[in-house]
Length: 276
Image (tube, rainbow, N blue to C red; front, top):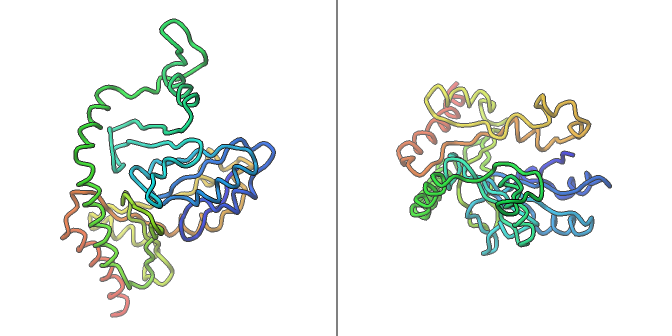
């Protein structure tokens, strides 16, 4: 079952989640979208009322803290991605964080063919282990993580100051009392901007600026899901965001001059419209 998102945070709307729960619901699967924490308090209350676990997709939320504590403590389990596009990378791989040792031991067995020991398998598992080479790469990355996060924060701040006041561009907020990792810099291209999102994306691409329409298209529109009854649910907020979302480039080696050039491009397009 799919549920709509909050129009401001881009995260699952707790009211929509509760409305989507049926007797067959076995878990809630929220995403900390762009690294902004979900409304974990309300989702926890819903999960408790219905007696189901919350499994958080925290792929974007490495090192993110809310009210001084890691968001990975929330729910029954959180999953992390260490893909090359993430703020912390092992090239490929990820991690699962949970409170319960029995659950952790089950996950450990499942990722290793279901082995209990060298001679016994207790369940059907997969080969989901991280290689030593990937782990070594990650250990080296940890040495540079603080500096990388600081630089991402500086780029985020430069974008926000530069884009402030441009009509038709809305910067997705990081949330109150949140220590963000600045893994993404999403903006919404509104009707007041002279180009729609796709038009702006084409202009930026032509200038060699690697902006990304992310998340787009919606999962409910993809062929693998389109025919499912669950995909028939109305998700107007998610659809509106998907039609307007654009993530601007952000990575530690991005220079201030390039950031300023991207901002100037976005401002010039507004100026061209006024001149016309």
